[in-house]
Length: 138
Image (cartoon, rainbow, N blue to C red; front, side, top):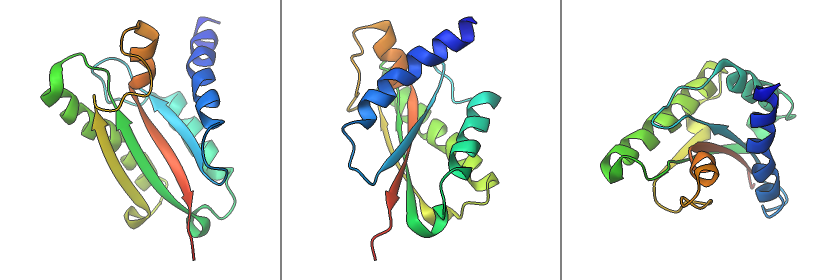
């Protein structure tokens, strides 16, 4: 029960954020513990199910990974951690047989936080990789 409540609280702000995205953009966020780049099995399964639910994924979309961290640990550590997080998500995509050329990555580290790092919940929300699908324009 507690796990469900935590997941619900984490997903709510992502839904609100998605309301402001361009209409054709589709996104999902993978969240991490403090200082971690490990993706739990539940989130990996959710990512795979989400990808499977998108018709003609590889023909219609380019995949962009944007990684974020909270400010704990300083700039150098967070730059490294941000790269490790995006790498973990990229590895999941490659295991799903998504070609590497379909994936681009931007590692923000502690720069450009979407949520306030002045609160614990804001810091939790900033520990993530956004998986964003952009339509391929012909």
